[in-house]
Length: 398
Ligand code: LMG
Ligand code: NDP
Ligand code: PMR
Image (cartoon, rainbow, N blue to C red; front, side, top):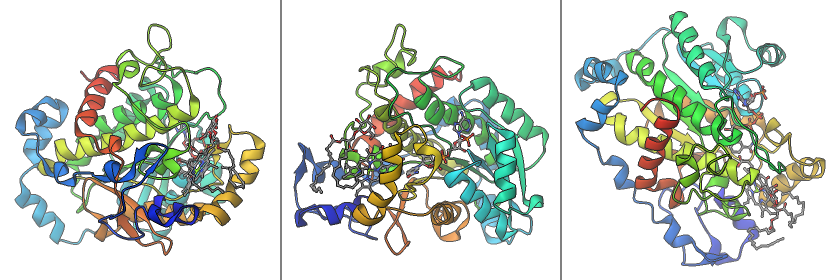
């Protein structure tokens, strides 16, 4: 968390005070970045509705929006107690944060978790060894690095006739030491292709299903990160996230006739990951602007804390993997265990108090949640719209 940078910093660096929604800080800068400038996030813009034309552009959701939009019906739904289990899809639930969240929810007995994983056997073993009650989960194959697989997953899920109450876009890959880009089945650079474009298609397709659910609180959650937010210390460790003018994304990120990087620059695996997280956070807000008012669905993102022991760092050098957990535990104090991070994400899935839409959640050191501020780029309304429009072309929705 930005706040956890505090132990590193001179006093003027009291960024993102723990637990406080409204951040106030002295104007200061780090490597030329003005923190006060980048923190001037205008959250009122999140309430700006784009109007009906946007909804009608949404194609598939259109008829659903007409059926399900009346706020009276939804209001009635909010009030009554539902007895059935909630049904939640979690991508990348075979390890780390996804598995810990699946376990936390399955253990309550109030949720059925659809674990959407690329490695079926690994997921099955993981669920078993985590001791998840077997009646509370189902594993379904999903490889986010293939748009065909995403579409197939949606078909399989629909055939299961389970309702969809919450979708959690959690899976991610990170290639910090890669010298050359690698690609998804559709030819997109692998980290943005998996973390952003795969999830973008998945969540656009499943929005219809979320909208059909009669569950009192329907949510679409996309996992973000501090490292994509340049209004924090962690977000200023080079290479920094920067989507530029999206020229690489517009060109298809294929490394042939366009750059593999969103901003069109030379390939950098660590930057590609951070850029993908910016896309995740922008996508959440664009969903909120386009659909929250008409559907009542909650759109949220979060930074779960630094879970320094997960598989995310599997491609990093061994020295990093050894030093990173103690560095985060004892120096930045940003460390959280997998179990703790799972409880946090499970809260965003199920807590009645966390229904606010358009929010980027974080937790302070007492593990109390608060609405955090996104960086200037990660809350740029125009950029969110452009990322959405370019992405829908790339995944074949426009
Ligand atoms: C890049 O390197 C790689 O090039 C890239 O391939 C990819 O892997 C990417 O994000 C992933 O990282 C980043 C690299 C260089 O950072 C390091 O890992 C270097 C570690 C240097 C250690 C610094 C001292 C900390 C003391 C703790 C020792 C315990 C163990 C450390 C474990 C390390 C694991 C993280 O980054 C740089 O270029 C160096 C400059 C770092 C800039 C950070 C930006 C904010 C700095 C703000 C300074 C605030 C002042 C306080 C300073 C106090 C320092 C004690
Ligand atoms: P893990 O590597 O443990 O988990 C990532 C999951 O994504 C794995 O289950 C992995 O599957 C799955 N996955 C990867 N590629 C695909 C794919 N093509 N299709 C389907 N699933 C795939 O990492 P974390 O638990 O740390 O990461 C989870 C989320 O948390 C990510 O969004 C990450 O950005 C975010 N995050 C993590 C932080 C941390 O400190 N660790 C901090 C901030 C955010 P498999 O098991 O088969 O490899
Ligand atoms: Mg970072 C307050 C300080 C803080 C926090 C909360 C994180 C989180 N990091 C912090 C500070 C620093 N880190 C500092 C000062 C350095 C330089 C020594 C540093 C370095 C560093 C590296 C090399 N940190 C990293 C890396 C990675 O490869 C990780 C990364 O960027 O993955 C994209 C990472 C992370 N630091 C974090 C978190 C949460 C990560 C990883 C995961 C993520 O964002 O998803």
